[in-house]
Structures are given as structure tokens and as C-alpha cells.
Amino acid sequence: MKSILNEKNLKRKKILLRLDLNVPLENGKIIDSTRIDKILPTLNFLIQQKTKIIILSHVGRPKGKTIKKLSLKPIGEDLKKKLNTSVKLITKNIYEIKNKEFFEKFDEEIFILENIRFYAEEEKNDFKFAKHLAGFGDIYVNDAFSCSHRAHASIQQISKFLPSFSGLQLDLEMTALNKITTEITKPITCIIGGSKISTKINIIKNLIPRFNNIIIVGGMANNFIEYFGNNIGKSIKEKNCDEIIEEILSLSKKKKCKIIYPEDVLVSKDFNGSSINKELDQILPDEMILDIGPKTVKKIINLIDNSKTLLWNGPAGYFENPNFANGSIKIAKKIIENNKSNKIFSVVGGGDTVSLLNKLKLVGNFNFVSTAGGAFLEYLEGKKLPGITALN
Image (tube, rainbow, N blue to C red; front, side, top):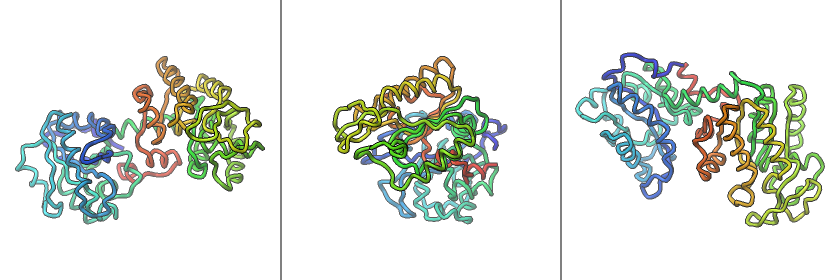
């Protein structure tokens, strides 16, 4: 994979730049601009190189139809302010743009083609559509890691027609992921949560041979607590998971990876209640587990202290209620403390974990925070991502 950073002679080149600008919009206003902010370094770099930038991106799932409220217009306006440069939204039908000469008649440095998913051919990974898009530029750059698990025309197919490179944000994402999957500094620990083991089983199986410790928290820990003979009251759990748990325990034994689940918990009778600390054999039928207890927090902190690399995916409890955010907050603060003294390399990913860190205003304190969602998880499962494979 070649990075655009290492490419000489970009001056006056037209760069087709695939970004993920799929930010939440409400009445045409951007609610969270994290994804926009992350790609500003790539745009600034290309501006400095005196290139013409043609952005390809999407918002929402218009499924091949033009939907006004899913326009990239507010994103263009946001970029204009942040980059202090002219940005032009091209609303003209893509098929009416014949070639790259079209962009010569404008003075702007940055163009945004209207929502690429307004065209059904995008998600169909259409060959002719990709070839037509490629005709607008001299070079293709993918800086949308979070879309790279999709075999779409502007992500996979387009690279067949142009010299193709990775962008700065994609480089950072890949470097961070490689540090927790291939170029590992051990001991390495994974803290993994979520409500369903079945959605994370492939990640756990892929990580067990490489990791020293896998700590199971959140809703899926309830299945482990019950598997080992404890009553979990009315806690959320996934049905028919004993086989999956046995598979995890058997593989971890073989590969000498420790599986850790809560030793004590915080419970309540409902999601809005206050917390009571309980040992695993004390949970009543009308109680539910909503966070890890102090003994478990202490054990996890000790494991973080003895790790050189850490992956965190999924909060430890129902953090929406502050009474059950303690486990996640203590984990976050311990990782940050060890980060500051360079004792650990930490990667955090997954929507809920990122939401928690945003809420606590702690996002900037980790080595890498991935907002990539599906692509992040598929990479951890060991899957080949079409957008990355296309760049190799």
C-alpha cells in the first residue's frame, strides 16, 4: 500500500479523494464533526501540494435516489470554514460531466461531488460507473478506512483505472491496527464488551492466538457468569451460547491466552436505579447486572499495568446511567495514565466506547481512537477489506 505522503510531483494534479463524511445531520446542521476533523490533515497536505481536490463521499443510505436532506452541502460549508479556502459542491449529474477538463473552468481548490450514493451504481460496485468517475482525476486516494469494508465503486472498483494511494488518516488507522494484530509488543490485553457474544466470537477467536489476556465485560460477560453456575437475575444475555463459550475457553487454553470475566458486579432492579455491589452468588431473580464491581475493576487495572499494548472495544457497563459508568471510567483513566508515561500503546474502537470517551471528553488521550465501526471490527476478525486490498 502506497501512501500519498510519499508521492512526488503532485502539483496541478487532479486528486479523486474518497472520504467518509457520513456525519449525523439534523435539519441540515452537523451534530458531530469528528469524521470531518480527522481528514483535515489530508486536505491540508493536498492543498499545500497545489493540487485540485475532487471529493467523493456519501451521507446516509439514499439507495440510489436523490434525497435533498442527504446532500453534502452542509459538509462543504463546514470544510470551507475549517480550511479557509473555497469549496464548490457539484450538483450536476455525474454522467453529464464528460471528463476532468470540466473542473478547469472553476477557480476553487476543492470540489465535492454530490452524495455518491445518489447513484445505485455506487453500491453495486459498477465497473462502468467507476471508470467514468476515474475519468475526473489523475490520481485516486482512499482516506475512508471506515468505508473500506464495502466493495463499492468509489472504494474498490475505481482503483483499477488510476494510480491509487492511501490518505493520511487511513495510514494512521492501518498503523494502529497493525500494532494490535501483527507488529505486537507483548504483553497484550483486549477488553471487549457488547451485548452479544455471537457478534464478537470471530474477533475473539482471531485474537486469542495473538493476545495474552482477553477481558470480557458488558452484557456478554453475563453469559460467562451464568455459564459458571451463577444466577444472573433478569440481566441481558444471549440465548444458546454455551457452545460458543466452550469454544472460546478451549481455544484460549490451547493458545495460553487468559480469559477474564467479572468477579463481582453492580446490580439494580432497573436501568435508572442506583447501584448495589454484589458477589456473583448473591444476585437476586429481580436484579440485573449493569456494571463491573470494585474487585473486578482492581483486577483489570492490574492487567492494564502489566500490559504493553491494549485494545478496548465495548464499555464495561450501562454507562448511560452514571451509577453504572464507574467501571468504564476507571478503565479509561488507567489507560490514559499509562499512556502519558509511555507504558502502553492503546487502541480504542467501537461506537459505544467512542461515545463514552466523547462524553467524558477523553478521546484525545489515547494513542488511537477509531471511528470506523464495521471496518474496524471486520479487520479484527481477520477479514480482507476490499478497499485496502484494492490499494495493494
